[in-house]
Image (cartoon, rainbow, N blue to C red):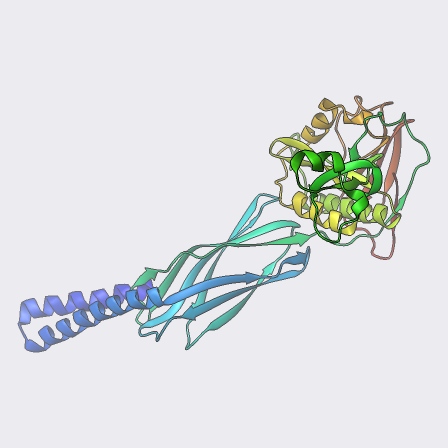
Length: 390
């Protein structure tokens, strides 16, 4: 575009010089025609830019290591007069890894609605935000570019690759959960525990009416029973992009997330409910996982949170809130060789550390009677299933 624009203005300058020295009508007419042409193209291009709308479409989910198809839809409101193509500055940000990639796209315009398929490599798991930092429309002479209306960003989640992990439940426990252990109350069928109250609607069981409260409020109030549930196992991801001066390999981070996902699904297949301690801006928050829908919700939550610079913050928050007294087993997930200080958990809770490491074979080390460290390859053989004892 710059070369054509430079050549066009160079021709105008040459014609002006010739007109000055030779004063021929031909040069005056040529200069006037080219000048008016540029002015008309500039005005019509602005009109075209107002008619064009651009929209991004992406699938709601993908898998790490595959291609993520992005669809760019360009729709003109009316006839396009002098526009030739659109120039799009596309930004691809992975919220979990904090990485940003940029691509410059040139989309040739045609009649009616146009749909462009752009393959985006999904090299990392995590929530991905796709946005247009700039959209410009170019004219047929490549003289001008005019900015178009802002485009709404879209997001999708890239889930970790599937790995085969056989989860075995340890029979050994350390201590017992406190009497006020992580108890979750939800609506259920236990009439001895009250979950909530609400107004009576036709069809409700008359035995569930709270008569004493109804007499005070002068309207029928219904009890909703609860289903108390406690948890004995906690899953704690504690990842960091650096370990001292060493940058953690992205394969190790991806592998750690994949192992955490595989272990969680292995527990669910055995009917084991557990809690995941996930990071938030305010610290750790417990996410109860009993069903596949719970697991999907927690994965989306985890994959949208940035991996911190250094590991250890999640473990320190776990200890600061004394959660080791609420569970009998803790599964700590790390990336790279584990160098965390685990002395605060020794003897307080059964601890299994699972580390995703760039090694060819798994390794297990018992650090104490209550602490085991398991190192698993980031790229395991697809035909082999690693064993993890929780």
